[in-house]
Length: 129
Image (cartoon, rainbow, N blue to C red; front, side):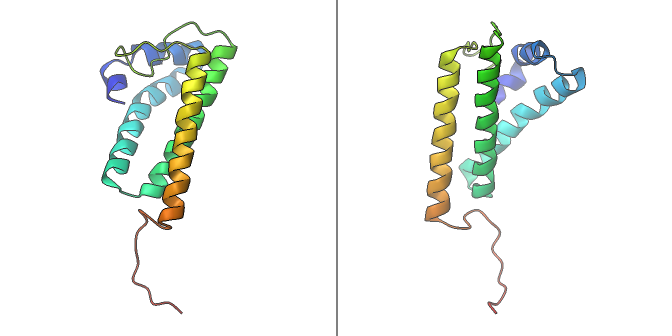
């Protein structure tokens, strides 16, 4: 997330290549890094852990589908995933990387949900009826 805030150029360029409306490009380039940082902090601090994990799974699913789509239509650009820190072009390795991240996030989410049902959810002191 931080690298996308420091350098939004690659992300904006790739979003423009898939013909997104300018307003959506700006919104995505602004909110995506903030969302990534927010989710990371929530997970580290164990705030609303299950909710943060579910949103993380959804985000990794979007990244995976974006990698498949970009590779399928032949985008030959850096995806902007890591700003200028690490070059990451659309290809089968990007698809595999995102599939692995998606799989890991699903496994972690399932383990946390099974280990601690209600973990990260607000506790109430309502009497049981």
